Length: 87
Picture 1 (cartoon, rainbow, N blue to C red):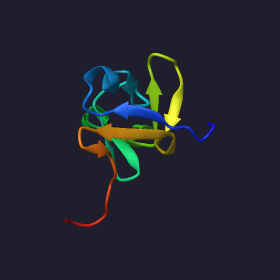
Picture 2 (cartoon, rainbow, N blue to C red; picture 1 turned 135 degrees about the horizontal axis):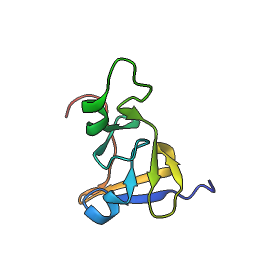
Picture 3 (cartoon, helix red, strand yellow; picture 1 turned 90 degrees about the vertical axis):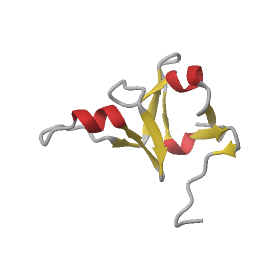
Picture 4 (cartoon, rainbow, N blue to C red; picture 1 turned 30 degrees about the vertical axis):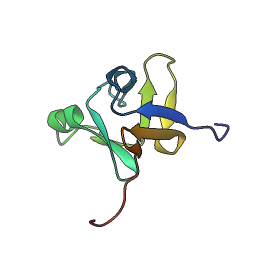
């Protein structure tokens, strides 16, 4: 990675659907410093090697994978940033 981040517009359905979790689901959400997938959480069993929490998204268009640090998430009000604590 050359320091330039890949941008994902969270409110753009086409942009969101381009990216999938490690198991290929599109039901991921950003949280803290990683991602979380609702479908993985529903399908998880005790012997499952996959977790609903992960640090990389796969781009279905290009075939590339990006870590959370290599992605800039954008919302309608600006960059997505997780802040600890309450407002």
